[in-house]
Image 1 (cartoon, rainbow, N blue to C red):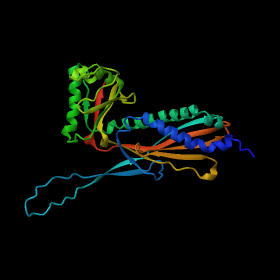
Image 2 (image 1 turned 180 degrees about the horizontal axis):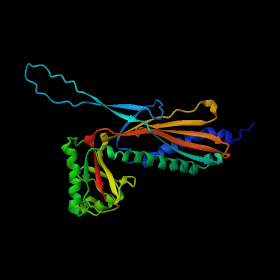
Image 3 (image 1 turned 180 degrees about the vertical axis):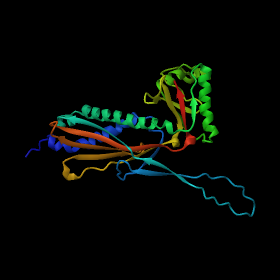
Image 4 (image 1 turned 90 degrees about the vertical axis):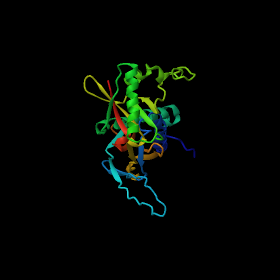
Length: 304
C-alpha cells in the first residue's frame, strides 16, 4: 500500500518547522533584546507569573596586615522582580498544509513574518521602560561640537557610575539622532580620526567605547516629538522569558516549543483546524517580561 502525503499526515510537521524557521529569523530582527541581560528557564510558566531575579550586594577590598585575620564580608543582596505580563502572538490561516511544506520559500516566509512581528513586540517592550530610568542626558544637535559633547556626557555617565570598561556600552537611537551623528565626520570616517579608510556604508563607527545602533522602535512622546533613546550596558535592562505550556494531546491541536539559550527566548507554535474559516490556523506566540535591572548601567538619552 502506498502512503500518500496529505494535509492530515503533514499537519504534524508544521508547528515544529515553523517554530524553527521563526526562531532562526528572530535573531536577525533583534538588536536591543540581544544585548541586555537574560533570565530564562525551560520550565513552563503562565501569564502574570512574577519572577524574582537576584542581584549581588556590594563588596569592598580591605587592608590585610601581617598576622591579622581576613575581614569577612556579608554583602546584602537584593532582588529585581520581573512580571511575565507580555504575551504576544501571531496567528495566520493556512489553506493547504501540503503545499506549504512542499514550498520551502513559503515556510520561510511564514517564519519571517512571525519573527518580525514578535521581535518588534519584544524590542518595543524594552524601549517603553524609559519612564523607570532615573537618569537622563539631552542630545544637543545644534552643531557638530554639541553633538560630540553630548556623546562625551554619555561616556562620562558610565565612568562616574563606576561601570567597568570591560562592559560593552551601547546606544540605541532613533533614525533622526542617527542621521545627526552621520553628519559628524569623526563618527563616520576613519580618515577623519587619522586612520586610513573610506565611507562604504551609512554606519556610525564605535565612538568613545559606545556601539551605536539605529532603530525605528525608539519610544516617543509629546509634541514636538521627544525621542527616548537608551544608552546602556548588558546589565542595565533584563528580558525574562519562559516557555508556554503545550495543549493536551487529545484536544486536536498540534504544538511545539523551541528555545534559544543565547537569546533567552522560547517560542511556541500551535496548529489546529478552524471550522469557521474552513482552514488550518497557525499561531506563534511568546511569553516574556522586561524590567530595569541596574540604574547605574542604563541612561535615557532624550533627543528631538
